[in-house]
Length: 601
Image (tube, rainbow, N blue to C red; front, side, top):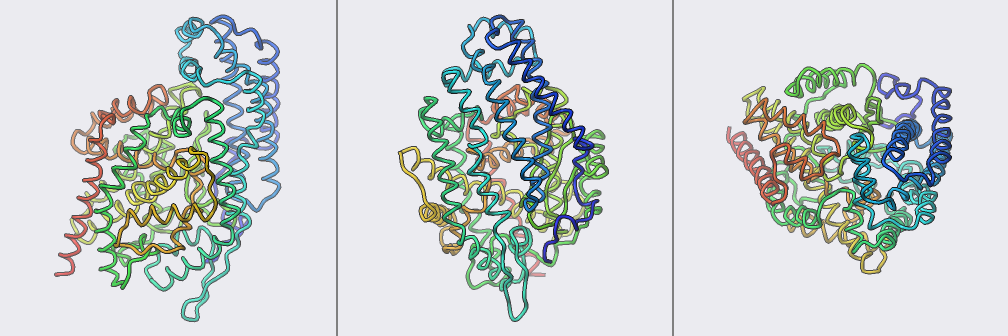
Protein backbone atom coordinates (compact mmCIF):
# COMPACT_ATOMS: atom_id res chain seq x y z
CA UNK A 1 0.00 0.00 0.00
CA UNK A 2 2.99 2.33 0.39
CA UNK A 3 3.02 5.08 -2.22
CA UNK A 4 5.51 4.86 -5.06
CA UNK A 5 7.72 7.61 -6.41
CA UNK A 6 6.45 9.54 -9.43
CA UNK A 7 8.94 8.00 -11.85
CA UNK A 8 7.56 4.55 -11.08
CA UNK A 9 3.90 5.34 -11.90
CA UNK A 10 2.83 3.55 -15.12
CA UNK A 11 2.64 6.08 -17.93
CA UNK A 12 -0.92 5.05 -18.81
CA UNK A 13 -2.01 6.20 -15.34
CA UNK A 14 -0.56 9.68 -15.82
CA UNK A 15 -1.91 12.68 -17.69
CA UNK A 16 -0.28 13.78 -20.92
CA UNK A 17 0.78 17.42 -20.68
CA UNK A 18 2.12 17.23 -24.23
CA UNK A 19 -1.50 17.91 -25.18
CA UNK A 20 -0.68 21.49 -24.18
CA UNK A 21 2.88 21.66 -25.52
CA UNK A 22 4.64 18.83 -27.33
CA UNK A 23 8.00 19.91 -25.94
CA UNK A 24 9.87 22.72 -24.18
CA UNK A 25 10.69 24.38 -27.51
CA UNK A 26 6.99 24.75 -28.30
CA UNK A 27 6.42 26.23 -24.86
CA UNK A 28 9.31 28.67 -25.35
CA UNK A 29 7.79 29.79 -28.66
CA UNK A 30 4.55 30.75 -26.88
CA UNK A 31 6.53 32.43 -24.13
CA UNK A 32 8.30 34.62 -26.66
CA UNK A 33 4.96 35.43 -28.30
CA UNK A 34 3.51 36.44 -24.93
CA UNK A 35 6.44 38.77 -24.27
CA UNK A 36 6.06 40.25 -27.76
CA UNK A 37 2.34 40.80 -27.24
CA UNK A 38 3.05 42.55 -23.95
CA UNK A 39 5.53 44.85 -25.73
CA UNK A 40 3.00 45.64 -28.46
CA UNK A 41 0.20 46.30 -25.99
CA UNK A 42 2.35 48.54 -23.82
CA UNK A 43 3.97 50.44 -26.69
CA UNK A 44 0.95 50.97 -28.90
CA UNK A 45 -1.93 51.33 -26.45
CA UNK A 46 -0.68 52.73 -23.16
CA UNK A 47 -2.26 56.17 -22.77
CA UNK A 48 -4.29 55.73 -25.95
CA UNK A 49 -7.47 53.90 -24.85
CA UNK A 50 -9.62 56.92 -25.59
CA UNK A 51 -12.25 55.64 -28.03
CA UNK A 52 -14.30 52.49 -28.56
CA UNK A 53 -12.33 51.25 -31.59
CA UNK A 54 -8.91 51.50 -29.93
CA UNK A 55 -10.32 49.81 -26.82
CA UNK A 56 -11.55 46.84 -28.82
CA UNK A 57 -8.40 46.45 -30.92
CA UNK A 58 -6.36 46.49 -27.71
CA UNK A 59 -8.61 43.94 -26.02
CA UNK A 60 -8.52 41.66 -29.06
CA UNK A 61 -4.74 41.46 -28.68
CA UNK A 62 -5.08 41.18 -24.92
CA UNK A 63 -7.35 38.14 -25.34
CA UNK A 64 -4.63 36.40 -27.35
CA UNK A 65 -2.14 37.35 -24.64
CA UNK A 66 -4.39 35.91 -21.93
CA UNK A 67 -5.04 32.69 -23.87
CA UNK A 68 -1.34 31.94 -24.31
CA UNK A 69 -0.45 33.01 -20.78
CA UNK A 70 -3.12 30.66 -19.43
CA UNK A 71 -1.60 27.77 -21.38
CA UNK A 72 1.90 28.56 -20.13
CA UNK A 73 0.78 28.85 -16.52
CA UNK A 74 -1.24 25.63 -16.70
CA UNK A 75 1.60 23.67 -18.29
CA UNK A 76 4.07 24.61 -15.55
CA UNK A 77 1.64 24.45 -12.63
CA UNK A 78 0.13 21.07 -13.52
CA UNK A 79 3.57 19.45 -13.75
CA UNK A 80 4.26 20.44 -10.13
CA UNK A 81 0.86 19.27 -8.86
CA UNK A 82 1.76 15.62 -9.47
CA UNK A 83 5.28 15.80 -8.00
CA UNK A 84 6.13 18.37 -5.35
CA UNK A 85 9.39 16.48 -4.76
CA UNK A 86 10.75 17.62 -8.15
CA UNK A 87 12.61 20.85 -7.43
CA UNK A 88 13.32 21.50 -11.12
CA UNK A 89 9.60 21.58 -11.87
CA UNK A 90 9.04 23.87 -8.88
CA UNK A 91 11.73 26.26 -10.09
CA UNK A 92 10.22 26.36 -13.59
CA UNK A 93 6.77 27.03 -12.16
CA UNK A 94 8.16 29.78 -9.94
CA UNK A 95 9.90 31.41 -12.91
CA UNK A 96 6.64 31.32 -14.82
CA UNK A 97 4.84 32.87 -11.85
CA UNK A 98 7.40 35.69 -11.72
CA UNK A 99 7.05 36.30 -15.46
CA UNK A 100 3.26 36.39 -15.16
CA UNK A 101 3.53 38.88 -12.30
CA UNK A 102 5.92 41.08 -14.28
CA UNK A 103 3.76 41.10 -17.40
CA UNK A 104 0.61 41.60 -15.35
CA UNK A 105 2.17 44.64 -13.73
CA UNK A 106 3.20 46.12 -17.06
CA UNK A 107 -0.25 45.60 -18.55
CA UNK A 108 -2.20 46.73 -15.50
CA UNK A 109 -2.62 50.03 -17.35
CA UNK A 110 -5.34 48.42 -19.47
CA UNK A 111 -7.79 48.00 -16.61
CA UNK A 112 -6.73 51.28 -15.01
CA UNK A 113 -7.24 53.33 -18.19
CA UNK A 114 -10.53 51.61 -18.96
CA UNK A 115 -11.74 52.27 -15.43
CA UNK A 116 -10.97 55.98 -15.92
CA UNK A 117 -12.46 56.17 -19.41
CA UNK A 118 -15.90 57.78 -19.88
CA UNK A 119 -18.71 55.30 -19.37
CA UNK A 120 -20.07 56.18 -22.83
CA UNK A 121 -16.84 54.98 -24.47
CA UNK A 122 -16.97 51.63 -22.69
CA UNK A 123 -20.63 51.13 -23.52
CA UNK A 124 -19.97 51.90 -27.19
CA UNK A 125 -17.11 49.39 -27.18
CA UNK A 126 -19.40 46.80 -25.59
CA UNK A 127 -21.96 47.33 -28.34
CA UNK A 128 -19.32 46.85 -31.03
CA UNK A 129 -17.65 43.68 -29.65
CA UNK A 130 -19.44 40.70 -28.15
CA UNK A 131 -16.17 38.93 -27.18
CA UNK A 132 -15.08 41.96 -25.13
CA UNK A 133 -18.50 42.84 -23.70
CA UNK A 134 -18.28 40.84 -20.49
CA UNK A 135 -14.80 42.08 -19.65
CA UNK A 136 -15.82 45.69 -20.13
CA UNK A 137 -18.96 45.15 -18.09
CA UNK A 138 -16.85 43.87 -15.22
CA UNK A 139 -14.60 46.93 -15.50
CA UNK A 140 -17.63 49.18 -15.11
CA UNK A 141 -18.91 47.15 -12.17
CA UNK A 142 -15.55 47.26 -10.34
CA UNK A 143 -14.90 50.92 -11.06
CA UNK A 144 -15.77 52.14 -7.53
CA UNK A 145 -13.11 49.86 -6.05
CA UNK A 146 -10.22 50.65 -8.39
CA UNK A 147 -7.11 52.28 -6.92
CA UNK A 148 -4.67 54.73 -8.48
CA UNK A 149 -3.05 53.24 -11.62
CA UNK A 150 0.41 53.17 -10.04
CA UNK A 151 -1.02 51.36 -7.01
CA UNK A 152 -2.68 48.82 -9.28
CA UNK A 153 0.62 48.35 -11.10
CA UNK A 154 2.44 47.73 -7.81
CA UNK A 155 -0.19 45.26 -6.64
CA UNK A 156 0.02 43.36 -9.94
CA UNK A 157 3.80 43.17 -9.57
CA UNK A 158 3.30 41.64 -6.11
CA UNK A 159 0.79 39.02 -7.30
CA UNK A 160 3.29 36.17 -6.94
CA UNK A 161 4.07 37.27 -3.38
CA UNK A 162 0.36 37.19 -2.54
CA UNK A 163 0.43 33.45 -3.31
CA UNK A 164 3.16 32.76 -0.75
CA UNK A 165 0.81 31.64 2.07
CA UNK A 166 -0.70 28.99 -0.23
CA UNK A 167 2.75 27.96 -1.43
CA UNK A 168 3.93 27.51 2.16
CA UNK A 169 0.82 25.47 2.95
CA UNK A 170 1.40 23.16 -0.01
CA UNK A 171 5.11 22.76 0.65
CA UNK A 172 4.51 21.83 4.28
CA UNK A 173 1.72 19.44 3.36
CA UNK A 174 3.02 17.82 0.20
CA UNK A 175 6.81 18.10 0.39
CA UNK A 176 7.85 18.30 4.05
CA UNK A 177 5.37 16.08 5.89
CA UNK A 178 6.74 12.55 5.96
CA UNK A 179 4.38 10.28 7.85
CA UNK A 180 5.65 7.42 10.02
CA UNK A 181 4.02 4.03 9.78
CA UNK A 182 1.66 2.90 12.55
CA UNK A 183 1.00 -0.46 14.19
CA UNK A 184 -2.19 -2.35 14.94
CA UNK A 185 -1.94 -5.70 16.71
CA UNK A 186 1.65 -6.20 15.66
CA UNK A 187 1.10 -5.33 11.99
CA UNK A 188 2.83 -2.29 10.52
CA UNK A 189 0.91 0.01 8.16
CA UNK A 190 2.53 2.69 5.94
CA UNK A 191 0.99 6.15 6.15
CA UNK A 192 0.81 9.16 3.85
CA UNK A 193 -1.50 12.10 3.21
CA UNK A 194 -3.46 10.54 0.36
CA UNK A 195 -3.21 7.07 1.93
CA UNK A 196 -5.11 8.40 4.92
CA UNK A 197 -7.59 10.59 3.03
CA UNK A 198 -8.40 8.05 0.32
CA UNK A 199 -7.94 4.73 2.11
CA UNK A 200 -7.59 4.54 5.88
CA UNK A 201 -10.37 7.04 6.60
CA UNK A 202 -12.72 4.60 4.81
CA UNK A 203 -11.30 1.39 6.30
CA UNK A 204 -13.95 -0.92 7.73
CA UNK A 205 -11.64 -2.03 10.56
CA UNK A 206 -12.22 0.42 13.43
CA UNK A 207 -8.84 -0.29 15.01
CA UNK A 208 -6.95 0.42 11.81
CA UNK A 209 -9.09 3.44 10.95
CA UNK A 210 -8.76 5.08 14.35
CA UNK A 211 -5.04 4.28 14.72
CA UNK A 212 -4.43 5.82 11.30
CA UNK A 213 -6.36 8.93 12.33
CA UNK A 214 -4.31 9.29 15.53
CA UNK A 215 -1.01 8.88 13.66
CA UNK A 216 -2.12 11.21 10.87
CA UNK A 217 -3.27 13.87 13.36
CA UNK A 218 -0.04 13.53 15.30
CA UNK A 219 1.99 14.47 12.25
CA UNK A 220 -0.38 17.37 11.41
CA UNK A 221 0.06 18.70 14.94
CA UNK A 222 3.82 19.01 14.37
CA UNK A 223 3.07 21.53 11.62
CA UNK A 224 0.11 23.36 13.17
CA UNK A 225 1.95 26.58 13.98
CA UNK A 226 3.51 27.11 10.56
CA UNK A 227 0.20 26.19 8.89
CA UNK A 228 -1.67 28.54 11.20
CA UNK A 229 0.79 31.34 10.45
CA UNK A 230 0.40 30.77 6.70
CA UNK A 231 -3.38 30.92 6.94
CA UNK A 232 -3.33 34.01 9.15
CA UNK A 233 -1.10 35.69 6.56
CA UNK A 234 -3.65 34.79 3.87
CA UNK A 235 -6.68 36.21 5.66
CA UNK A 236 -4.83 39.33 6.86
CA UNK A 237 -3.79 39.99 3.28
CA UNK A 238 -7.42 39.64 2.13
CA UNK A 239 -8.62 41.98 4.86
CA UNK A 240 -5.98 44.54 3.88
CA UNK A 241 -7.10 44.40 0.24
CA UNK A 242 -10.74 44.79 1.25
CA UNK A 243 -9.88 47.88 3.26
CA UNK A 244 -7.64 49.38 0.58
CA UNK A 245 -10.30 49.01 -2.08
CA UNK A 246 -13.05 50.43 0.09
CA UNK A 247 -15.30 47.42 0.64
CA UNK A 248 -17.55 47.43 3.69
CA UNK A 249 -16.11 44.10 4.88
CA UNK A 250 -13.79 41.31 3.84
CA UNK A 251 -16.93 39.30 3.03
CA UNK A 252 -18.10 41.93 0.53
CA UNK A 253 -14.63 41.94 -1.03
CA UNK A 254 -14.47 38.16 -1.42
CA UNK A 255 -18.05 37.81 -2.68
CA UNK A 256 -17.75 40.62 -5.25
CA UNK A 257 -16.28 38.43 -7.99
CA UNK A 258 -18.78 35.67 -7.24
CA UNK A 259 -21.60 38.12 -8.05
CA UNK A 260 -23.77 36.95 -5.18
CA UNK A 261 -25.19 38.73 -2.14
CA UNK A 262 -24.22 38.42 1.51
CA UNK A 263 -27.72 37.08 2.10
CA UNK A 264 -27.13 34.17 -0.30
CA UNK A 265 -23.80 33.40 1.39
CA UNK A 266 -25.09 33.42 4.97
CA UNK A 267 -28.28 31.53 4.02
CA UNK A 268 -26.28 28.63 2.66
CA UNK A 269 -24.32 28.21 5.88
CA UNK A 270 -27.09 28.98 8.38
CA UNK A 271 -29.85 26.82 6.89
CA UNK A 272 -27.67 23.77 6.34
CA UNK A 273 -26.17 24.00 9.82
CA UNK A 274 -29.65 24.17 11.33
CA UNK A 275 -31.78 22.00 9.05
CA UNK A 276 -29.38 19.31 7.83
CA UNK A 277 -27.74 18.53 11.18
CA UNK A 278 -30.67 16.40 12.52
CA UNK A 279 -30.64 14.25 9.36
CA UNK A 280 -26.88 13.70 9.48
CA UNK A 281 -26.97 12.85 13.17
CA UNK A 282 -29.46 10.08 12.35
CA UNK A 283 -27.10 8.88 9.63
CA UNK A 284 -24.18 8.84 12.10
CA UNK A 285 -26.27 6.83 14.57
CA UNK A 286 -27.10 4.37 11.80
CA UNK A 287 -23.40 3.87 11.01
CA UNK A 288 -22.73 3.34 14.71
CA UNK A 289 -25.48 0.73 14.88
CA UNK A 290 -24.45 -1.13 11.74
CA UNK A 291 -20.77 -1.26 12.71
CA UNK A 292 -21.53 -2.01 16.38
CA UNK A 293 -19.38 0.86 17.66
CA UNK A 294 -19.51 1.72 21.35
CA UNK A 295 -18.84 5.36 20.49
CA UNK A 296 -19.18 7.20 17.18
CA UNK A 297 -16.06 9.29 16.65
CA UNK A 298 -15.07 11.81 13.99
CA UNK A 299 -12.74 9.19 12.51
CA UNK A 300 -15.75 6.93 11.82
CA UNK A 301 -17.87 9.31 9.75
CA UNK A 302 -16.66 8.22 6.31
CA UNK A 303 -17.15 4.48 6.71
CA UNK A 304 -19.56 2.73 4.38
CA UNK A 305 -23.03 1.57 5.33
CA UNK A 306 -22.19 -1.80 3.78
CA UNK A 307 -18.39 -2.15 3.44
CA UNK A 308 -18.71 -5.73 2.20
CA UNK A 309 -20.77 -4.44 -0.72
CA UNK A 310 -18.25 -2.00 -2.15
CA UNK A 311 -17.04 -3.60 -5.36
CA UNK A 312 -13.54 -2.98 -6.58
CA UNK A 313 -13.47 -0.96 -9.79
CA UNK A 314 -10.48 -0.84 -12.11
CA UNK A 315 -9.65 2.26 -14.13
CA UNK A 316 -10.75 0.48 -17.29
CA UNK A 317 -13.88 -0.82 -15.56
CA UNK A 318 -14.89 2.70 -14.58
CA UNK A 319 -15.21 3.67 -18.22
CA UNK A 320 -18.37 1.64 -18.79
CA UNK A 321 -20.06 3.02 -15.69
CA UNK A 322 -19.32 6.62 -16.67
CA UNK A 323 -20.12 6.29 -20.36
CA UNK A 324 -23.50 4.72 -19.64
CA UNK A 325 -24.27 6.92 -16.65
CA UNK A 326 -23.59 10.18 -18.49
CA UNK A 327 -25.13 9.08 -21.81
CA UNK A 328 -28.19 11.18 -20.95
CA UNK A 329 -26.21 14.23 -22.14
CA UNK A 330 -25.96 12.82 -25.67
CA UNK A 331 -23.29 11.34 -27.98
CA UNK A 332 -21.01 14.40 -27.95
CA UNK A 333 -20.63 14.19 -24.19
CA UNK A 334 -19.95 10.44 -24.32
CA UNK A 335 -17.29 11.05 -26.97
CA UNK A 336 -15.64 13.56 -24.62
CA UNK A 337 -15.54 10.87 -21.92
CA UNK A 338 -13.93 8.43 -24.35
CA UNK A 339 -11.42 11.05 -25.39
CA UNK A 340 -10.52 11.69 -21.74
CA UNK A 341 -9.60 8.01 -21.25
CA UNK A 342 -8.00 7.53 -24.65
CA UNK A 343 -5.87 10.69 -24.71
CA UNK A 344 -4.84 10.60 -21.03
CA UNK A 345 -6.58 13.66 -19.65
CA UNK A 346 -6.62 12.00 -16.23
CA UNK A 347 -3.79 11.49 -13.75
CA UNK A 348 -4.85 8.37 -11.84
CA UNK A 349 -1.48 7.55 -10.23
CA UNK A 350 -0.84 7.31 -6.52
CA UNK A 351 2.59 8.65 -5.73
CA UNK A 352 4.48 10.53 -3.08
CA UNK A 353 4.51 14.31 -3.50
CA UNK A 354 1.26 14.40 -5.47
CA UNK A 355 -1.55 16.78 -4.56
CA UNK A 356 -4.36 15.20 -2.60
CA UNK A 357 -8.05 15.18 -3.48
CA UNK A 358 -9.14 15.88 -7.02
CA UNK A 359 -9.46 18.79 -9.41
CA UNK A 360 -10.01 19.62 -13.05
CA UNK A 361 -7.99 22.26 -14.90
CA UNK A 362 -9.36 23.41 -18.26
CA UNK A 363 -6.90 25.71 -20.06
CA UNK A 364 -8.67 27.75 -22.71
CA UNK A 365 -8.33 26.23 -26.19
CA UNK A 366 -7.18 22.83 -24.92
CA UNK A 367 -8.72 19.78 -23.28
CA UNK A 368 -9.13 19.43 -19.53
CA UNK A 369 -6.68 17.81 -17.12
CA UNK A 370 -8.06 15.85 -14.17
CA UNK A 371 -6.12 14.92 -11.05
CA UNK A 372 -7.19 12.20 -8.63
CA UNK A 373 -5.69 9.13 -6.95
CA UNK A 374 -7.31 5.86 -8.01
CA UNK A 375 -8.07 3.48 -5.13
CA UNK A 376 -10.37 1.05 -7.00
CA UNK A 377 -13.47 2.14 -5.09
CA UNK A 378 -16.83 3.19 -6.47
CA UNK A 379 -16.22 6.53 -4.76
CA UNK A 380 -13.44 7.05 -7.32
CA UNK A 381 -15.98 6.60 -10.11
CA UNK A 382 -18.12 9.34 -8.60
CA UNK A 383 -15.05 11.57 -8.20
CA UNK A 384 -14.10 11.06 -11.84
CA UNK A 385 -17.68 11.76 -12.96
CA UNK A 386 -17.54 14.93 -10.83
CA UNK A 387 -14.34 16.17 -12.47
CA UNK A 388 -15.63 15.25 -15.92
CA UNK A 389 -18.56 17.50 -15.08
CA UNK A 390 -16.09 20.38 -14.88
CA UNK A 391 -14.48 19.21 -18.12
CA UNK A 392 -17.83 19.09 -19.92
CA UNK A 393 -18.78 22.48 -18.55
CA UNK A 394 -15.62 24.20 -19.74
CA UNK A 395 -15.53 22.40 -23.06
CA UNK A 396 -19.00 23.87 -23.66
CA UNK A 397 -18.35 27.41 -22.41
CA UNK A 398 -14.79 27.65 -23.78
CA UNK A 399 -16.15 26.64 -27.17
CA UNK A 400 -19.00 29.15 -27.07
CA UNK A 401 -17.44 32.15 -25.32
CA UNK A 402 -14.31 34.29 -25.43
CA UNK A 403 -11.74 33.75 -22.68
CA UNK A 404 -13.17 36.85 -20.98
CA UNK A 405 -16.50 35.02 -20.50
CA UNK A 406 -15.27 31.72 -19.07
CA UNK A 407 -14.47 32.81 -15.53
CA UNK A 408 -17.64 31.29 -14.07
CA UNK A 409 -18.58 32.39 -10.54
CA UNK A 410 -17.38 29.93 -7.93
CA UNK A 411 -20.89 30.08 -6.47
CA UNK A 412 -22.08 28.17 -9.53
CA UNK A 413 -19.00 26.35 -10.79
CA UNK A 414 -19.58 23.20 -8.71
CA UNK A 415 -23.10 22.70 -10.08
CA UNK A 416 -22.10 20.87 -13.30
CA UNK A 417 -19.65 18.64 -11.41
CA UNK A 418 -22.00 17.61 -8.61
CA UNK A 419 -24.77 17.23 -11.20
CA UNK A 420 -22.73 14.43 -12.79
CA UNK A 421 -22.51 12.59 -9.47
CA UNK A 422 -26.29 12.71 -9.15
CA UNK A 423 -26.82 11.61 -12.76
CA UNK A 424 -24.48 8.65 -12.13
CA UNK A 425 -26.34 7.65 -8.97
CA UNK A 426 -29.77 7.88 -10.63
CA UNK A 427 -28.49 5.72 -13.50
CA UNK A 428 -27.24 3.07 -11.08
CA UNK A 429 -30.54 3.05 -9.17
CA UNK A 430 -32.34 2.14 -12.40
CA UNK A 431 -30.12 -0.86 -13.11
CA UNK A 432 -31.30 -3.11 -10.24
CA UNK A 433 -34.20 -3.70 -7.83
CA UNK A 434 -32.01 -5.51 -5.31
CA UNK A 435 -32.45 -3.93 -1.86
CA UNK A 436 -28.83 -4.22 -0.91
CA UNK A 437 -27.72 -2.65 -4.18
CA UNK A 438 -30.20 0.22 -3.82
CA UNK A 439 -29.06 0.87 -0.27
CA UNK A 440 -25.46 0.90 -1.49
CA UNK A 441 -26.19 3.46 -4.24
CA UNK A 442 -28.19 5.67 -1.89
CA UNK A 443 -25.42 5.50 0.70
CA UNK A 444 -22.90 6.47 -2.00
CA UNK A 445 -25.00 9.57 -2.64
CA UNK A 446 -25.19 10.44 1.04
CA UNK A 447 -21.66 9.47 2.10
CA UNK A 448 -19.89 10.78 -1.00
CA UNK A 449 -21.83 13.41 -2.94
CA UNK A 450 -23.86 15.03 -0.17
CA UNK A 451 -21.57 14.37 2.78
CA UNK A 452 -18.57 15.78 0.92
CA UNK A 453 -20.32 18.87 -0.40
CA UNK A 454 -23.12 19.54 2.09
CA UNK A 455 -21.26 18.52 5.25
CA UNK A 456 -17.47 18.49 4.91
CA UNK A 457 -17.19 21.63 2.79
CA UNK A 458 -20.12 23.34 4.51
CA UNK A 459 -18.55 22.89 7.95
CA UNK A 460 -15.32 24.22 6.50
CA UNK A 461 -17.31 27.25 5.36
CA UNK A 462 -18.87 27.72 8.80
CA UNK A 463 -15.41 27.61 10.37
CA UNK A 464 -14.03 29.96 7.73
CA UNK A 465 -16.80 32.48 8.38
CA UNK A 466 -15.83 32.70 12.05
CA UNK A 467 -12.18 33.26 11.06
CA UNK A 468 -13.12 36.12 8.76
CA UNK A 469 -15.36 37.65 11.43
CA UNK A 470 -12.35 37.81 13.76
CA UNK A 471 -10.15 39.29 11.05
CA UNK A 472 -12.83 41.76 9.97
CA UNK A 473 -12.97 43.04 13.54
CA UNK A 474 -9.22 43.70 13.49
CA UNK A 475 -8.03 40.48 15.12
CA UNK A 476 -5.68 37.71 14.07
CA UNK A 477 -5.75 33.93 14.37
CA UNK A 478 -3.24 31.35 15.61
CA UNK A 479 -3.22 27.57 15.36
CA UNK A 480 -4.81 27.29 18.80
CA UNK A 481 -7.59 29.72 17.87
CA UNK A 482 -8.22 27.91 14.59
CA UNK A 483 -8.45 24.53 16.30
CA UNK A 484 -10.85 25.97 18.85
CA UNK A 485 -13.12 27.40 16.16
CA UNK A 486 -13.09 24.17 14.17
CA UNK A 487 -13.88 22.04 17.20
CA UNK A 488 -16.80 24.26 18.19
CA UNK A 489 -18.25 24.18 14.65
CA UNK A 490 -18.04 20.38 14.53
CA UNK A 491 -19.61 20.00 17.98
CA UNK A 492 -22.47 22.31 17.09
CA UNK A 493 -23.33 20.34 13.96
CA UNK A 494 -22.91 16.79 15.28
CA UNK A 495 -24.21 17.35 18.83
CA UNK A 496 -24.02 14.25 21.01
CA UNK A 497 -24.16 11.92 18.00
CA UNK A 498 -20.41 12.11 17.36
CA UNK A 499 -17.47 12.49 19.72
CA UNK A 500 -15.29 15.43 18.64
CA UNK A 501 -11.77 15.37 20.09
CA UNK A 502 -8.66 17.51 19.67
CA UNK A 503 -7.55 15.46 16.66
CA UNK A 504 -10.80 16.25 14.90
CA UNK A 505 -10.18 19.93 15.64
CA UNK A 506 -7.07 19.78 13.40
CA UNK A 507 -9.26 19.23 10.33
CA UNK A 508 -8.75 22.92 9.48
CA UNK A 509 -5.22 22.00 8.38
CA UNK A 510 -6.37 19.67 5.62
CA UNK A 511 -8.18 21.98 3.19
CA UNK A 512 -6.49 24.08 0.45
CA UNK A 513 -9.78 25.85 -0.34
CA UNK A 514 -9.17 28.26 2.52
CA UNK A 515 -6.56 29.93 0.31
CA UNK A 516 -9.14 30.52 -2.44
CA UNK A 517 -11.42 33.02 -0.73
CA UNK A 518 -14.99 32.05 0.09
CA UNK A 519 -14.91 28.83 -1.92
CA UNK A 520 -15.88 26.05 0.50
CA UNK A 521 -19.51 27.14 0.86
CA UNK A 522 -19.99 27.14 -2.91
CA UNK A 523 -19.93 23.34 -3.09
CA UNK A 524 -23.27 23.17 -1.31
CA UNK A 525 -24.55 26.08 -3.42
CA UNK A 526 -23.63 24.27 -6.62
CA UNK A 527 -25.09 21.00 -5.39
CA UNK A 528 -28.33 22.76 -4.49
CA UNK A 529 -28.68 23.88 -8.11
CA UNK A 530 -27.61 20.43 -9.34
CA UNK A 531 -30.17 18.64 -7.15
CA UNK A 532 -33.02 20.75 -8.46
CA UNK A 533 -31.80 20.53 -12.08
CA UNK A 534 -31.43 16.76 -11.78
CA UNK A 535 -35.03 16.51 -10.54
CA UNK A 536 -36.12 18.41 -13.63
CA UNK A 537 -34.22 16.01 -15.86
CA UNK A 538 -35.78 13.02 -14.09
CA UNK A 539 -39.30 14.38 -14.62
CA UNK A 540 -39.06 16.39 -17.86
CA UNK A 541 -36.34 14.53 -19.75
CA UNK A 542 -34.88 16.04 -22.92
CA UNK A 543 -36.29 19.55 -22.36
CA UNK A 544 -34.46 19.85 -19.05
CA UNK A 545 -31.28 18.34 -20.54
CA UNK A 546 -31.28 20.94 -23.30
CA UNK A 547 -31.81 23.74 -20.76
CA UNK A 548 -28.83 22.42 -18.81
CA UNK A 549 -26.67 22.41 -21.95
CA UNK A 550 -27.57 26.08 -22.48
CA UNK A 551 -26.37 26.76 -18.93
CA UNK A 552 -23.05 25.04 -19.64
CA UNK A 553 -22.50 27.08 -22.79
CA UNK A 554 -23.36 30.39 -21.12
CA UNK A 555 -20.08 30.62 -19.19
CA UNK A 556 -19.93 33.85 -17.21
CA UNK A 557 -22.25 35.81 -19.49
CA UNK A 558 -24.81 35.41 -16.68
CA UNK A 559 -24.41 35.68 -12.91
CA UNK A 560 -25.34 32.70 -10.67
CA UNK A 561 -28.95 33.81 -10.34
CA UNK A 562 -29.19 34.09 -14.13
CA UNK A 563 -27.50 30.73 -14.75
CA UNK A 564 -29.80 28.97 -12.28
CA UNK A 565 -32.78 30.73 -13.84
CA UNK A 566 -31.76 29.44 -17.26
CA UNK A 567 -32.03 25.94 -15.74
CA UNK A 568 -35.49 26.78 -14.35
CA UNK A 569 -34.37 27.28 -10.73
CA UNK A 570 -34.96 30.37 -8.57
CA UNK A 571 -32.10 30.69 -6.08
CA UNK A 572 -33.19 34.13 -4.88
CA UNK A 573 -35.35 32.28 -2.31
CA UNK A 574 -34.53 29.56 0.21
CA UNK A 575 -36.89 27.11 -1.53
CA UNK A 576 -34.30 25.14 -3.56
CA UNK A 577 -31.98 24.80 -0.55
CA UNK A 578 -34.73 23.64 1.80
CA UNK A 579 -35.97 21.18 -0.82
CA UNK A 580 -32.44 19.81 -1.28
CA UNK A 581 -32.05 19.33 2.48
CA UNK A 582 -35.34 17.43 2.59
CA UNK A 583 -34.15 15.33 -0.36
CA UNK A 584 -31.05 14.33 1.61
CA UNK A 585 -33.25 13.52 4.61
CA UNK A 586 -35.42 11.37 2.36
CA UNK A 587 -32.41 9.41 1.13
CA UNK A 588 -31.35 8.78 4.74
CA UNK A 589 -34.89 7.65 5.63
CA UNK A 590 -34.78 5.19 2.73
CA UNK A 591 -31.35 3.87 3.76
CA UNK A 592 -32.64 3.27 7.30
CA UNK A 593 -35.77 1.55 5.97
CA UNK A 594 -33.77 -0.74 3.69
CA UNK A 595 -31.35 -1.52 6.52
CA UNK A 596 -34.23 -2.52 8.79
CA UNK A 597 -35.70 -4.77 6.09
CA UNK A 598 -32.36 -6.38 5.29
CA UNK A 599 -31.67 -7.05 8.97
CA UNK A 600 -35.13 -8.58 9.36
CA UNK A 601 -34.65 -11.00 6.44
